[in-house]
Image (cartoon, rainbow, N blue to C red):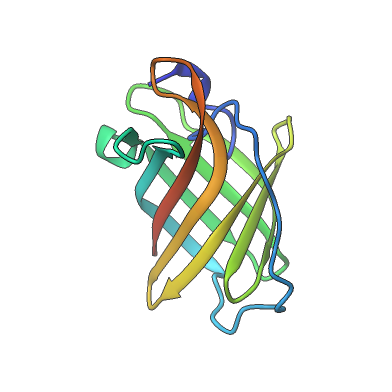
Length: 148
C-alpha cells in the first residue's frame, strides 16, 4: 500500500487521475441523503483483474454524510493514523454518482456507476491510478457503503 493513498476524500485513492460524468437522466428516485459507512473499498487493475487491493479489511474506515443540498462531509482513517475530514459536492442520477472533494485541496472528482438497494449503496467503476507496488497503473475503484 502506498502512503500517497491518503489524500482527502480519496484518502483512499491518493494521487488519482479521475474521470467524471453523468447519464443525464435527472435526480435519483431513491435518495442517498444520510450517513453511510464503507463496508468494502477495492481498487482493481484495469489491465489485470487479479491485481487488486481491498482497504476496509486492512482497518481503513470511511464515513460519508450526504445532505439534501448536494453537499457531503466525510471522515477517513487508517489504523494508527489521525482521522482526516473532507467535504465537497455530489451529483446523482438513477445510475451515476459523481463526488467532488473541494476541501482540502486539491479538488478531486470520482464518477461511479451507482446502485442503491435498501440500505446498501454500491459505487463502481471510477477510473483512478494506483500503485500496487510495481508502478502506477490505471485502475477501477468500487465502494460498498451501508446506511447508518
